Length: 172
Image (cartoon, rainbow, N blue to C red; front, side):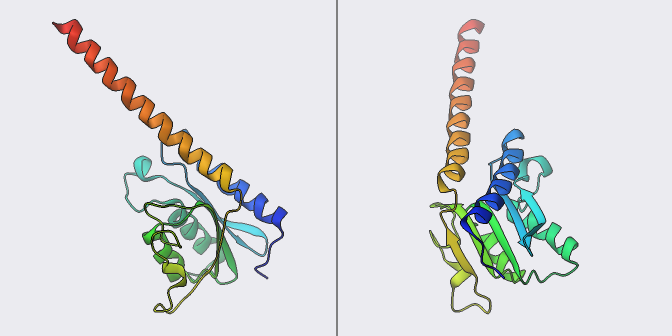
């Protein structure tokens, strides 16, 4: 029931990347997520912290909320969560609380990862719910959108500094 062909994994990860693009279009960190049940998407989400001014509006949280409404249950049994970047600690906790049995993510999150890189909340034997985790699906595409975002962000900051210096010189 939770086994997907490589082609299906790439189709759903492509949908998660479309969600990430929505974040990118709003100058948000571009992470996207879809939740699948019976090979149909039941929840979608993308980072919207800046847009909604809410710290918890991560892609996974948005997708879980929508899937809860679609399925009509807080338990998302028989669902798979596809996300472009490894879930953070908060999102890993939410995934466990929603009882999602499987997570597939594209690229690792070395600084905030809660599903294997920094912490491994989803597979921690001390918790009452453990999640099957698969990594590396469309990894290069998932990493690239993040790398491009942060590179462009650094360039914008550098340009803003340069313009600020010019303004100071002109005011003299």
